[in-house]
Length: 243
Image (cartoon, rainbow, N blue to C red; front, side, top):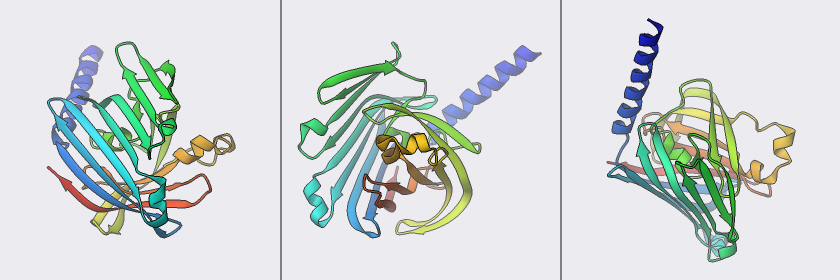
């Protein structure tokens, strides 16, 4: 009896994963406005495309005014669309034309190895199940929106593999943005007040507060983070097109 129950539960979970994969759009185009301490800072343009069981995500940040001198920040992620959602194979981060700031990450799922290349030097660590990269993790919510009060997600920043611990602050939180009115799931880092985490500059920079659009495929419609100097960076959705 117990065996039948467990098999039935497993089948139901697989079915739900497959339904989520089917429900997710095959193509998404997003545009965000970004402010720094309330002042215009940048525009972020993102695209997600899925075809033949594969996906590609590209995110390009272009500075406004004097911030344009920093150069484009381009994130790309490519990989497989599996029953459980996105399974990255390769991730890149490019900042301007300075190759020393480029980051390259490869996911070897059969061998459970994650190789991050920083300034041309590779570092290899164990690849944890469900690991995402800095851009794919946001799109993984299309396939697996938060179900409980908290979630833990392994994410590679391109330099390190970290566990992102998020708490669900609020559900059905209403937001009115340039792209429209959304009911959202509000997520915040559960460990953001941990003194040990705060002493880690890279970890502090990776902290993000997210609002996922419940009727926008659970994609982020608002993001708040802080830069190296503690300035508040706010990213808000201005346009969304999905097919």
